[in-house]
Length: 293
Image (cartoon, rainbow, N blue to C red; front, side, top):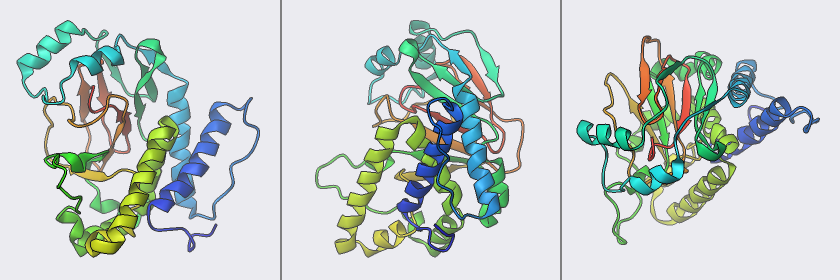
């Protein structure tokens, strides 16, 4: 497949996801997978970016860190009507479910809960190549959050209809999506490796949304032609510190993915539930359950 023939919508994510999955399996399990991934005729910098993410994921997979977190107990105890913004409430939660000893991470790793369930992927420097090589990289500054079902917030009634965000309806936003299509698709493809079933379900949701909007929402249809990811929401957090919280309306086994981009330094992501602080430099990707952690 040549560069010019690559799709511009969510199918781009599917193309890259297949390649990344094959590459991950061949590197992580060389004794079981002996084939070479089908190559793409991509720009050299893009290919390097894909291999950078995959290599970091393989390093993380082979560096498991055990924690005391029990995902099932957390899921049962977290109310869908609370945001845990109350610090006293958060302190009480940590007393009830004490984390492991505090540690600082600056190298690729996965954190395991009980029964060896992966509750967090930490991928520092995973995006270094792709963001430097992308023409629109200068537009990135801050933390990009890729989330599922964010459109449900405040729209729980049966008569509520899905619609596009006001920001995404502008020409500038569509230009940004086109400029950042490959990095966004690469981040989406991470989900296809860490949670294949969730990735497949999200792609099916995008496909259904695309079919329905073709008939009655031309603005959303226009945006979906350049929407390159399985996630239904991309948010930019810039020049602010986020309070302790968890995301409502999500399931405990769903992953959110955050990508830190820009040229800043000396940032830390603190996750008290796990007892970890993550060095949060540009190029870092973290995948975890925003509902539980």
